[in-house]
Amino acid sequence: MVTAHGEGRSGSHYARIRQGILEGRTGPGTVLIPSALSAQYNVSRTPVREALIRLEQDGLVEQATRGYVVRTRTPEEILQICEARIALEATMAQAAAVRRTELDLARLVHVHEATAATTDPVELRTLNSEWHVVLRDAGHNPTISELMERLDAQLKAYDSYTAPATDLPDNLSQIVAEHDGILDAVSRRDAAAARDRMVAHQSRTRDLRLGAFARSTRGAF
Amino acid sequence: MVTAHGEGRSGSHYARIRQGILEGRTGPGTVLIPSALSAQYNVSRTPVREALIRLEQDGLVEQATRGYVVRTRTPEEILQICEARIALEATMAQAAAVRRTELDLARLVHVHEATAATTDPVELRTLNSEWHVVLRDAGHNPTISELMERLDAQLKAYDSYTAPATDLPDNLSQIVAEHDGILDAVSRRDAAAARDRMVAHQSRTRDLRLGAFARSTRGAF
DNA sequence: GCGCAAACATCTGTATACACTTGTATCGCA
DNA sequence: TGCGATACAAGTGTATACAGATGTTTGCGC
Image 1 (cartoon, each protein chain N blue to C red):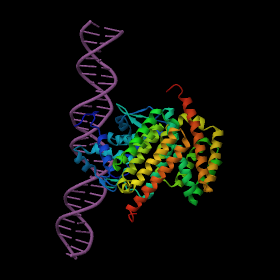
Image 2: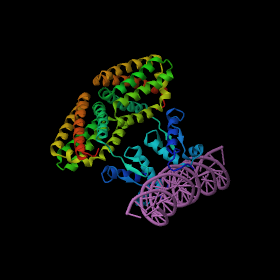
Image 3: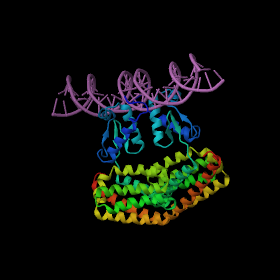
Image 4: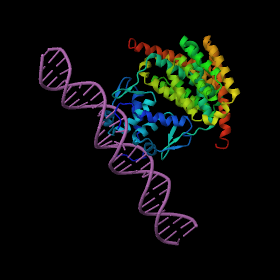
């Protein structure tokens, strides 16, 4: 058995199952049976149950009559999640323009330059979301950051459906251009411009994502 | 013992502890010991643990070395929560102006008229938050509604500190007036006005709340 | 072969057991 | 009296036990 307060806490199972969902290995609709997972991880049902409860509270899985199911989202729900994201991210861009430190700005520039320099779509993808994380940190509102992590996770579970569209070269260069504009506004402490540009950026991403998702699930709803 | 799928599920303990926190009976800083709670409710630690995990995920309690503690918020954190609320509620007001049905509007008017008619501060308080709930429903975005319930809960745990300020008669009449303006914009489907007025309304509430909270905790941080 | 009931396997929620850790109090000793 | 070491009480996380519920398969009459 593992010690009471050691590192092998139940949180590790939470992280593991969660990652499986986010990476698309455990797709929407997959049923998760506590006893099966506990056998797979060589632990008892108790810590697995705890992990599933956390995931349920995160909105990533839901309880079924028999087990837990990875939540399936309709295009409408995806749209709603995007709407929430736009509102919060715009507020964060605005806040970043007002509250950013020089260090925040340096970090943003650093990630942005790395993004502009790479050509690998996968790395670009990672750097893009990294840039958003850094921007949120620059907004200095952990409460909103936490909410956005939640929303990001809910969307990420559907990335496999939308990746084909969002990874197109012209979209990637468009993203870099938009980030550039936001970065400029933040560095000039122009809160209104930062907000407006973020709304435009996220709205465009939303439309792209939604279109791809609707196309890939045509007839399923 | 209670049945496997009956009504006496662990969710009831979650609701009960949660309510205690929201109503201020279990104030910030209070330590919650699973074994103590389980004895109090005449159940084992298991369902209590489950409830506490849910509450932790809600941001209402946090794990300490020994038990769980009702989260203590600094004025800065309260401000951050309000900032998130403003962003989301403004989006919802905008959405309501666009997507409201006639039934949504009728409900809003009904609650609003009841609010304007009463003089009891406690009832007014209840009706005010009821009005916001109805408005969110009119926005037709359950994802945002869910996030806002979360934020509301986090703030409500501090209502006992801020109630003295927010319950002043002139504030209450001001709230009714502001609601009236938002309602007007929503009924006219003027999304921009609905958004702007909601931002103004919530910003004012935030300042009031924050001032009262800062005053009541002077020197504590 | 088909429909239905009974047996079965499996999953659920909760209770209890247990090894381990930690904070506190007790007690001997200078 | 003051101060450690030690013992103890209480809490933590996980494993296991168990009763009740729920699908699923089996087997029987038709």
